[in-house]
Amino acid sequence: MFEISDIGKEISTKYKPENPKTGKPITPKQRAKRAMRKENAKQIIADIGGIPKINESFDILANGQSNAGGFYEVIRDTWGKVDCLCVATWMINRQYIDQLTEDLDSGKLKKLVFVISNRMSQLGKGHAPNFNRMKQKFSELDNVHFRVINSHAKTYCMTNGKDYITVDGSGNWSENPRIENYTITNSKEKYLFRLEWMMEMCKVK
Image (cartoon, rainbow, N blue to C red; front, side, top):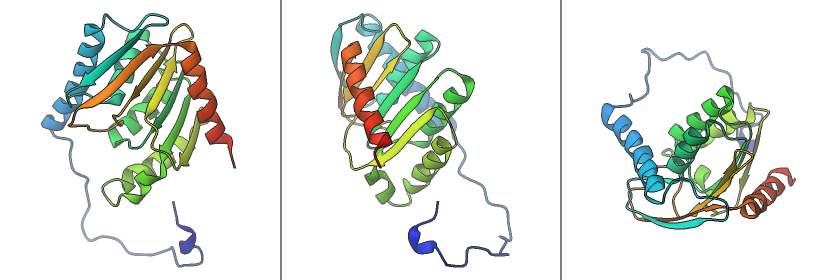
């Protein structure tokens, strides 16, 4: 993606690096941490008796070993597929960008509505590559509604056509090594409310 200020500047070059360049490898420790976050989310779901039944709601205080995206992974695996996922978050890491893209490609996820804070693009080189990757990946898919907005909202909802799960909380779709609060609810009304306002944000000019 180019900034408006780049228009009219020379954007072609014959430069080639002298040596190949590689990204940092994902270490076994990083893989273990990712698996641990999902396993902790799985344990939290088990501790509340499984995915909430219709009109049930549970409050959760997480100890920093899980994150918002972990609940999506656990519920998706339990259901087998997700018809629609609506996400509003302040931050997302590369792991979840790629995970959501893979789920959309494989059919595990049928439709994604995603609104991200414009703040993510302003946080420097630590987050800008992920922000640009997300814009590229999501813009290429027909079953994604995507918009960057001035937002600090952290909520998401998902359905399989029978259950309607909403996860509200302080955590992002990234590493959260701190105490976070969540509420997990099975409510069609809460799901439809989030779907409506996120779609409105995605369609507004």
